[in-house]
Image 1: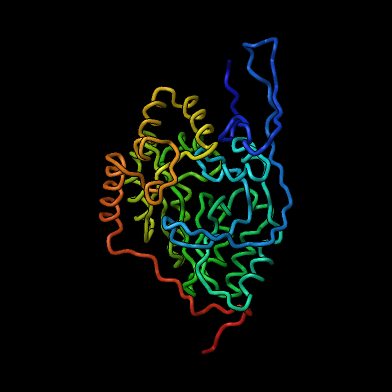
Image 2 (image 1 turned 90 degrees about the vertical axis):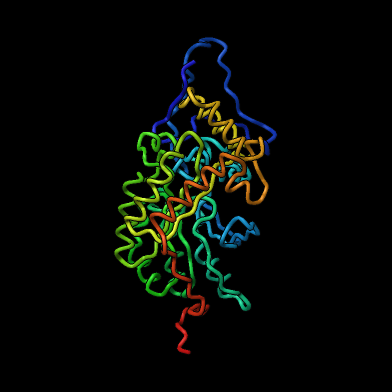
Amino acid sequence: MSKVIFKGRGANFEPNNPYLRKKLVSEHVEGIDEAPYMDRPSTKYYEEYTKGALSKNDSPDLPLNYSVNPYQGCEHGCIYCYARNSHEYWGFDAGLGFETNIMVKHNIAEILKKQMSKKGYKVSPIMLSGNTDCYQPAEKKYGLTRKILELCLELRHPVSVITKNTLIERDKDLIKELANLNLIHVYFSINHLDNKLKSLLEPRTATAEKKINTLKEFTEAGIPCGVMVAPIIPALNTADISEIIKKTAQAGALNAGYTVVRLNGTVKKVFTKWLEENFPDRSLKVMHQIEELHGGKLNDTEWGRRIKGAGPMAAMIEKIFITSKERFMKGRSMPSFDLDKFSPNGQMRLF
């Protein structure tokens, strides 16, 4: 049977949601050898009015404890995305449904301001976003990320942004003002330099070249930028690690980090199907090496190992990364956030 491919989508099927008791199925009694017919999927947006804008995590693997996610679901379609699993809590699936059903938290900036203005609130850098990309295509339509940045500037609140999309260029004016106050870090997520791989792995993200050009433009404007080489997938993008760090360093990046892929929950099913269809010649090799990173399993919940892996493969990746960073970014670091400027009533402190 021919596989179904949707240009611009990562997943091409809708896996069962384990939290739902009922499911819709299609049976083809006749024409069993024919390719299944499916309408070209369109993106749908759902209004959501959140009661809490700040998401707290206690993970020792993450540098920041609070994140803000204006959108749930993501059109970027990154096949490995761990956020696919969380979409099942909303009643959608972790495959095509994650990419085509986007929850839009319209009131997130207002709720965030209330939380930050509460008596006793302790200022700490927030991350935009910890789950789905805050500069995904929906942002062009709804502008929630810009509203959050405007709020951070108004309250003098520190924020770290990570994205795979050059839509961030739209907000250069706000980001530059925040940078002048030592209130922002910008990270670009780049895990490959092959545009052909991008079209399969991260179909609706910007190319590495465009992201590096934006990084250079931001750096020249005085905005502190870094790169996340994430996730690293053995036998797919490991060969690009050193060159990514070199190119981003030449563009002005001050720091670099990395993670390795892990396939928890339904992401395992989505990724495995994608890998078998697009890289049948090396699918077993890739899967075995991912298992090697995580103690013989594809899923991993062990602190530390789930992010960086363990064993010979993980050691090789770490050595390549550390050696490259030492060679191309030696002596560089991101500036410290200025927490003393925070003013919950939106006025700058004079003393």
